Image 1 (cartoon, rainbow, N blue to C red):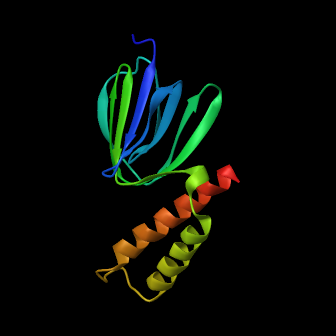
Image 2 (cartoon, helix red, strand yellow; image 1 turned 135 degrees about the horizontal axis):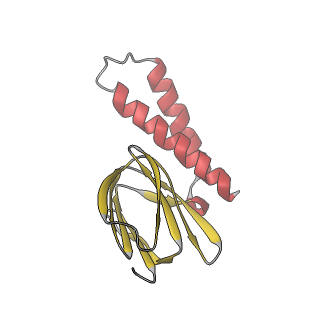
Length: 136
């Protein structure tokens, strides 16, 4: 069993976070899951939601998009489209994105090609707003 847990959060653009944590909670497609040191290895999908880790008694929150998580005994690697730390989220921009997606969805039916894209945009905006509120 490993004595430490290393978390790496990686997007296509950059390494968002890399460091030692006490625990991490990740939004999986089947629900949120937590990882502690010595966890059994597995690979899973990550969904839009809230990722947070606990280190030195402090929780740090991120709004994340879809991707994958690989867990080994001493390391969690999260490969995702986007990740924004709560204190870095532009809440005004997120609110504008929510308004735009809501307006677009009101003009579309579920059968329309753009419906799913706008629904995901709305979900991401709501998630970002919710996580930004944890920081304020």
